[in-house]
Amino acid sequence: MNALDLINFGTKELIQKRIISSRLDSELLLSKILNKKREEILINLDQEICQKNFSKYKKLIIRRSRNEPVAYILEEKEFWSKIFYVNADTLIPRPETELMVEKLVNMFKEKKISILDIGTGSGCILISLLSELKNSKAVGIDISKKALIIAKKNLVKHALQNKIRFLNKSLDSNFYQKFDLVVSNPPYIKTCEVKNLSQDIKKYEPRIALDGGNDGLDLIKKIIYKTKHTLKVKGTLALEIGNEQYKKVSEILIKKNFKIEHTIKDHKDNIRCIISTNIGN
Image (cartoon, rainbow, N blue to C red):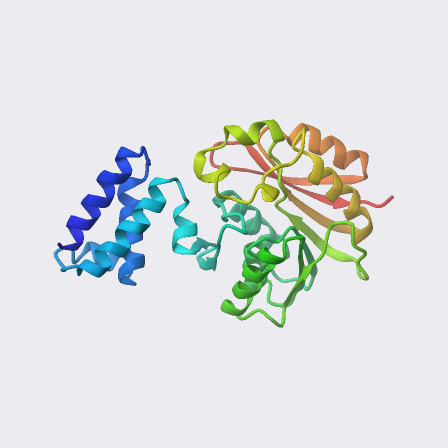
């Protein structure tokens, strides 16, 4: 069998399981098995594939046919033009989060700031920020020890150990410094809506990183309240939020003496991030 035969086989199997991105996924999984870039395979589709690799490939196709995300099968995801390790202990980085990173990079490009990332997961936000903000330093916290193992692997991969510390801390912990910027992509999905998520999300991504409580705002409220004590006056809070949460979140921010400076919309024109300033008590 050649590469094209395998891709066609994988595509057919995934189509039967109603996987929308069946062709692309089949190509990506073959690139994993052959340890070659997808583009290399596509320009050499007649290369012969041995039986051993075909067997390995079939196993990956079966995993994908059960809705396991490609990022978890590949154990990596591209974000901010970098490759990050991910697994089922971390949320898969998403394009809308890149929009928040882009805005913050533009805001702080030439400055020297201290950053706190709450619920750091794979560490992709901090690592992307610090790769651009050369003079800055950061702390990332997460209550998941398993997520922090992945974050620390990514830290080494991108050689930013002297700029970032990842700590196993909860939001209730005390901090012995105040930060210029607090950033977070917290869980913001209503508990009752988790069941409506696509199979690849609700079956495989960590629920703790998705479920935001009855109104979806449990962690967001907590972060805003906590940030009053961890953020310098005139410091910046950047929060990723869910669809249709802008009105409620902005009301909480204003009530807590934050001034809304910027909103960031996703590609579907939904406000997905609020950047605000702490104007004091």
